[in-house]
Image (cartoon, rainbow, N blue to C red; front, top):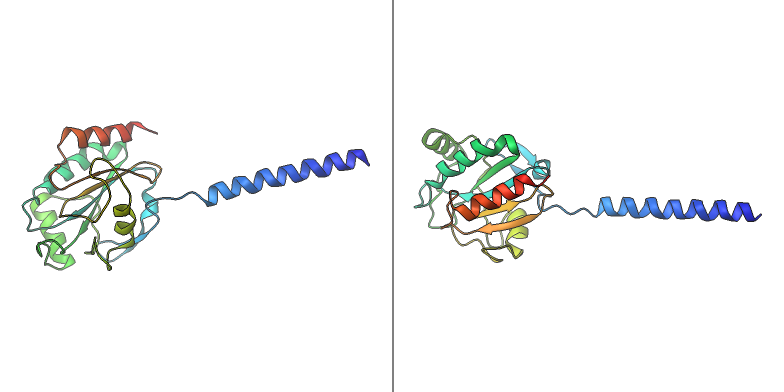
Length: 191
């Protein structure tokens, strides 16, 4: 009888341990836990990018910061084999500087800047109609920019390999800025 109690107790402890393991896996929260449409109209699960260092940036074709496309593309080309991906989200909320259709935007960024990083359909990045991804990212306090609504085109959110927001940079921080580059390189070095 004593042996049976020991066996039952061991079985209960194993069940509890397995149960907490499943709970930990189920509770894994990823800032990329959203779907979005590519600029060509295909639905993508953004969580598929977990395991990479992700730069999420709201882009516009007629902005003073539009030349950042070239720097983002150069960074993507330089680091993509090390695990970097840049995700471009066109937005027309700032000065109506992204008025074209998805096809117009794709034509512009590929023909003018040779962009080959993933581009997504035009979305809102602030306000009631903001894409849920941007609502979640904007609500978090991430250095150096902090929390709050996106202020202009070409704000950059950096997501680590675990799918967590680690940094946010305002429009004026160019992709060539040494703090931005250091942040990307630090995250790429983390496995």
